[in-house]
Image (cartoon, rainbow over all chains, first blue to last red):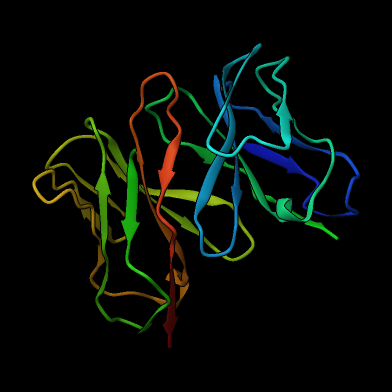
Length: 112
Length: 113
């Protein structure tokens, strides 16, 4: 089972560049999430979606955008990369809000 | 707001030692509680969960009991192995329409042979 697939695994960006982090799940989960993990800080929620066509902000949404045109995909967009966005990004999905979340392997992003 | 506090790491143990990682939480309602584990270079994996007071979650020799009176969910294992070396995250979820997890900062465990 593929589960939650994130691409790319690593990326280096220059300040001001833009990019999209891809996330796909094949479990027919309604809920999807984007987190960032900074060293020693646990995970912080960026955006989440409770179903196709529905997205909402999490704790740290500034500088990011998301879309959810299908149940399977939940891409995260950085429009103007800044050094503060250097982090490891995790996508997750769950069947419902009260159910455990399944995580991808992460995207390590460095902005120089 | 809701929050999770877990013991600072790193924790270094010898193989077969007893493990406790403390976790306490603050929540307005009745959250579900989780322990996730992150092995090097990988994403988080659910280790165990408990959804109501006095529930005990268990998996792979790890256990944690949902203690509402002390707002705690401490992780324990009687005999750790080298393969248990990882970062452990305590988390809560209020469920409802969002379902997002509130994480502790993580505790890194290293087990030496």
